[in-house]
Image 1: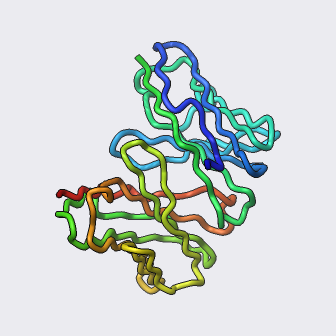
Image 2: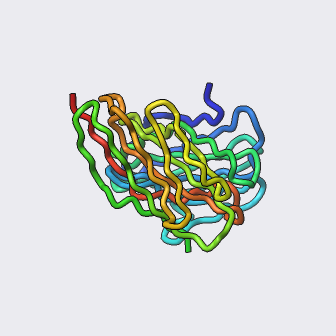
Length: 116
Length: 116
């Protein structure tokens, strides 16, 4: 079964509204989770590093006020796309690891966001 | 700086042909992991293999094999006797030991199309 669960898998929202995507580690505690974004026919680009109990670290060019990340517990990180616009339509996927070695990394199933 | 290059954007083969997907990486770190993932149209990332920088042994798993050569900074992936179900986008990725454990750097991806 899934070790990292992401929800929802598909979401359609109206332009101007906000949408929240959850990423849960099911079998382990993750002090760090990662959020990636993937446009059609493109690679996965890291958006931000979600740190439990502290602020997320955003990659260059990613608007922190638009993509709110909350990592309130050791098993849950959420990504909220605020005031969504059609250009935010994309595939969002999270990953988590039980330790910092990089030896084992688990990905969520991904979330398809369509903004209409 | 770390970088992963997959020069082949798209590859099309006929079923039962062998196909090799190239991956070249750059890093100054001596300790790192290399990964291959398969991404079917559903979007989910399927883990295929992880190789650490100290293990240059080639690996075979069924029809899949990987050739890791530190001398050329390459980690190529070969599918023998390809099947239609192998059609997907394949990503090569890199993580370095000191890189916040879990933060993957992806190549651009290679879209493999296997025709019957």
